[in-house]
Length: 220
Image (cartoon, rainbow, N blue to C red):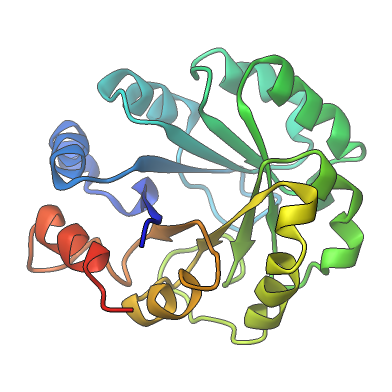
């Protein structure tokens, strides 16, 4: 079974970032997930524009840029100028007065438009945007910090999105507390990709290559 694995780079070792990118590439990661936080939309500061710029220059793999910032339309061109056609940019609909305007800017730059849905955000409130975006990033934890506990009621939201994705032409991705059992349960149901952080990928006593290989060989 084919599914995408993305590395949550806010969990990487920043003392050896170049080597981290290289090791993840050699290990078979599909893309690099970049969490940008402004300390306002979420109660944390995480990766910066320069972090994203460096990783973009250090790899040919796609980037998945997750903007956890207020009013992303005010700054979207700062990020788009360092990305490449085919990279993905996610915004949170609640963070913008007119999210469709921001999504259109992403589309015009030949990037893949996406929205991120918080645990407390209902599918009904983003229904119209599901017809615009190509990717939906479902947060299984409240955004802002790594190492949080999975919120089980998010599963029902994923089930609802799965029933709609073919008609509206989007793919579903999982972000937060992603363990092997979640991949085992949701990949067969149609979730396209999973963001891997401290639960499964980082901080292990094994190489990234070993972890990623074992993850891809999960028995369904």
